[in-house]
Image (cartoon, rainbow, N blue to C red; front, side, top):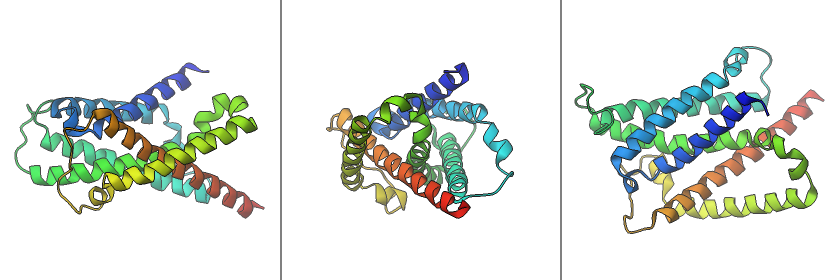
Length: 224
């Protein structure tokens, strides 16, 4: 495996872990949340530098259904990350408290919640969209029928629990601003919260993967 590929995988893995931790917010403390937010933004920039070829090709060639969806997803993730970064600066009380910013905290909190939850969903879809590429290094193993069907069964089970966790955690009300505040149960063990969000991430990785599979098939039919 090439060094650049290893760096890409490590950066993406780090971003995924940090994203899950960021969703815990108050459960890990505001100061740590802010520093993790800065870390993921730096990794986000690194991710785009390492994948700079995408920008060079964005205005070239024809747009198939899968390519169009990929670009829409890219724009959504980009807007969510920028919204999280800008609102994070506005409402920071620790890492960036030295900045001469006053006012706009109410708007900042609303934008931060909206950007964070949509960013979580869209990033998970994006991860699922590239799941095939991530599995390529182990393709010889994952392509074997027993392994393939076991992985599909596990993926389906995680996605099924992810639906339950999505409803249980009331993510819809945060995604569509039905409330201005996020509820946290401080008596709940942190690991249970993280496992639920891992399942929700798994659900949208699952959805993103199968959307990509369907769009690839549609593209092939159109070519034929």
